[in-house]
Image (tube, rainbow, N blue to C red; front, side, top):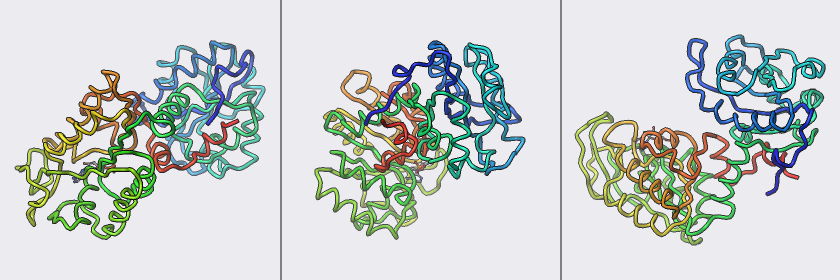
Length: 392
Ligand code: AMP
């Protein structure tokens, strides 16, 4: 996979259309978490340093092709001005002349791309209009790259294009994890349901050496093996699918690891009375809410021989203590191995970032992707249109 980066582009005096993801949480008109904004800082900084004029294109919420005042990107301006080390001008109705008139050293934020009906339809006219605004296209929004929209895909074909710094970091981390990994490679897949992760599991069993299944979805696999899981979250109708995945793994060199012991409670509540049990011992009125200590020990032992880890989804109901125990212990073991240089660890998707933050180790992983859907589609082995359009 090859793509250009900002280092390959001549940006002096050029208008650089920069697709960013600043779809940040907002409450009462103010940004409540600026993480996404802080992550685009290196790209904007480097474009300015190379003499380019960054013109940010972004979506915000789901206005479905109509102007919705509360979804105006204007809301993000104070946070952008705080974090980007430059003046930021807002441009509601951009044209080439108005962008050229902006002084050097200033970044421009264009209004929500999804206010235009052509954005989500990837309308060629919209892509051509965007291309007419700039000289170079830089995509720094990996998290929006699974969507073929005018500002993420269409325009990339019409201008010299490159990846921004965040996109570059994301692609390199994912390449290192799944493209050309140091082996053995282990994937941890947890979370609530098998049904949302079928394609991902199907792809991973072909690529990884060890697949560690945890969380609610492990119950579906245990049930498929004839184990009683009581009142646990379980998709009994997916027993055949779970068995197919296990059969597929037997045909490749992938070892699937299911929980060896379980933590069982009678209610889904913080501090609920609970017991560690063997996998065969879940009572009819019990709920499996976490993996037990033997499972964590098994994870530690397998991990100690692995060189690369991909992680998506918690091993238990990590939001309610003490059912966060297996997730926290496993995350800390992975963080330690990463810090000691023995492991490349890449995590992302859904609640994974929250789980790693909860364990206090998100900073210690090699890379934590904040891209939800795009990260999962990558794990499914899909080609992301926004990434494919950058390839030259
Ligand atoms: P996902 O978004 O698919 O990654 O699922 C994450 C959710 O799965 C979290 O809210 C967890 O609380 C939940 N979860 C994980 N393990 C269990 C379990 N054993 N029983 C019920 N919910 C679980």
